[in-house]
Amino acid sequence: MTFKRVVVTGAGALTPIGNTLQQYWEGLKAGKSGAAPITRFNASLFKTKFACEIKGFNIEDFMDR
Image: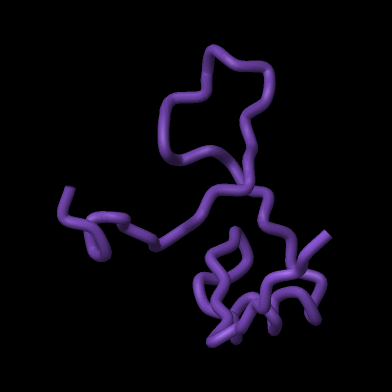
């Protein structure tokens, strides 16, 4: 088996408890839950009405298509 070298050049986080690594870490240390009522679509037809959505993130801010 051959191994390839891997170099980590940075770290980031996009999570239900924070959209930056700092926000995520602070939320994790504080025991924050990412679970909340679903806001992205009408969940009234589903048994589960909560999820761990990514808040305040718009993919179009980063990708044009």
